[in-house]
Image (cartoon, rainbow, N blue to C red; front, side, top):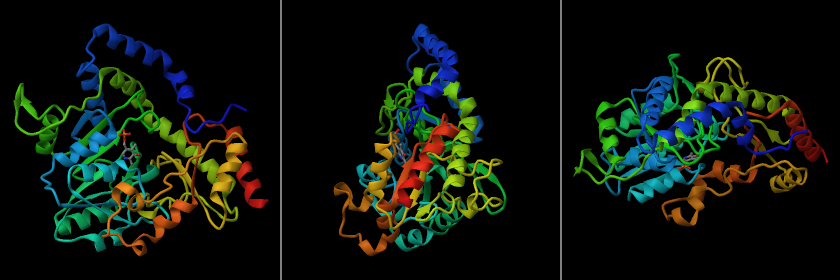
Length: 389
Ligand SMILES: *Cc1c(COP(=O)(O)O)cnc(C)c1O
């Protein structure tokens, strides 16, 4: 059996090696390292793939979130609601911009931001909601857009884990995650579903004025050379990374299908095993295929395949897997509201029952495009042996 890895970037590279190597060498040959034609072409190709009017490439997914927020007319002290159970980047940029993060609980099935918790958290100071499409599954965008409309709030989608996923609205309209809110961010960190070979990120929007504002912000607030109209940042996707992304983008659906196929095999092998809860596809994401992982739609792109282990020592399972040569991850082990940097008297433990439970139960299994049946069989057998012992 091939050695099991959490993410197999080398195996994936082998399939696209010739193309990646020649495009990277072309960039070096051209010396157009910054804002070269590769960046422009990638931007156009991603706009087309997502069916969104504007993609603005930038240096990483954290910058993308920050810049998206800088582009909106938010003022210090404005409240921004986001999920308690996610990667810290989301809350970090809110705090950095001197906005007030308002962390709320998540849904136990989808792990995504809970709608009632959003409604409960809205005050006259609330200005935006940041849903995170966690682990590759869309948050409930219909309802979130409705809440936002009712209260005149911006919706900023953190799509770092969801690129390529489809969201089916209650009217049956299918749209890519990251094209539904006012603005969205994504990351091209190597292990993300569309990863480059270094750092990279992008902002998406269908709003022409906002896109114009953001294009200036990423480039020192310049709209005309050496005229600085707003305080901006320097955040660029470099041409070598764009060349890698151009080689990978045509394969993104294939990559996401491979992830989904692996998830389906994990689900089948672990179905009905006591104390193991396999990932759920939540209803509104995919109206036709509730609770099963279908092969006909892109409703979940499995950035992570995350189990809940209940009434079982999760950390002992982690150790058992590691002892058997199986890497795994705990995303995320600490709720954001309990992190030293983000603790606040405003938070009440009783408002986070789901996150407080999930951090004890979740375990993410190896998930990438190169997993084979033998590896999946070995991983699931090792888990079943543990829970049965
Ligand atoms: C990876 C990630 C980010 C940050 O992306 P970087 O490119 O690492 O800065 C932000 N939000 C979420 C949910 C992520 O998973």
